[in-house]
Length: 472
Image 1 (tube, rainbow, N blue to C red):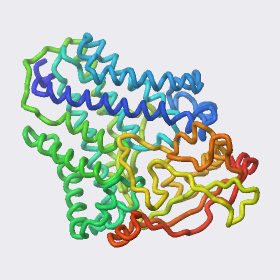
Image 2 (image 1 turned 180 degrees about the horizontal axis):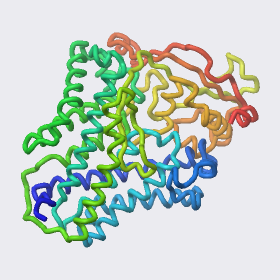
Image 3 (image 1 turned 180 degrees about the vertical axis):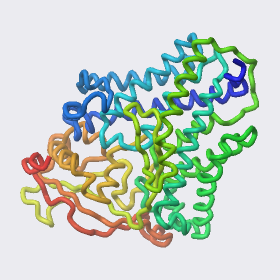
Image 4 (image 1 turned 60 degrees about the horizontal axis):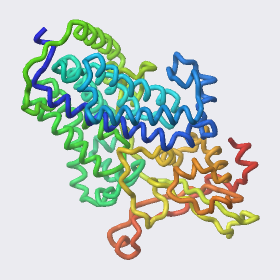
């Protein structure tokens, strides 16, 4: 069937596949380096406890069959190895069926991780990586031109990501409709980047232009993805530029980067290759999968037009078709939970309290934020939610404090610096809530600090190991 393939998208597929492999590598590295302390056997939310109460059908994962920290590490590093192989183009050296199976491997590996990741893996970019990764299995390799139905489904994902994000803004916080959200967002976003301070201090009229441009890109431009070329390329390119602007303004894990990767699949690079007929079994398989995904799209599509639109929800345990969105509301004030410890016998207010330093979240007012995305600092990100509401910390914060009292090596690896030597853990830890704001240009020149913070209240009173265990 000549209509089945799109030879003009050879280069588009190549760029998309290699970029997606790079994101898979980041995701598996993230799991290998962080998850022992987060969901390991002695983690804050242990996998064994989770699989004991959640059946396989609700969260399909190999870890229902067996879990150990060593097995999880092997699983994650295997994902890294497969990602490197795909990044190097090994799928193109295999027969068509072999290339498809190779692309299926990271999807299966990562699905098992996400489905037991609990709170730490509850964000839209996890489902987005799985949804896009599943489609990549059926995009083919050098033996066949890209199937047009798979390219269409990738644009359908991009449409839902952008249009859903635009709608949730218009239906959510009034500041999006008033074009004033960026007066606050760069200061109050989950994890600012090195340029966020400067973005915040841009003139307010420029912020209005930013918001208006964002609405245009998310609410109007997505419809042009389904137009003929070169209109679709122009639409995808505008989305890529917008996402790169967001990359510069903060740390949003790989949300921006995977949106860029999907947009790359819609770009016509003007380098067609001769048509390559697809085998019948491949055509039948791709069309059957496409029909299934279209049927599953009913609930996400209904969610888009619903007045009760929800963000970042999976409608099936395989994360095949999902709903997306971000920042339906914007915080006006920034609060941070600061954790401190002391080795003193009595935890008085005038004791020698020393602050734990996180890698990405604001702490020391003089320490400038760094760029981490697309790498995702999961603990830092959740600490932002804890500052918004203690309810976000109910299931794991007590365990975190216990691990700090133990000087747990895996937990301390999640931090930038512990104020206590490895052989001398603190006797007490506490948590305090501070209001943070960006300094002005004048304050920055005078003090060298990018943040100014004000004590608000006690978040957790001084706690020793026995009390922390009881809280956990």
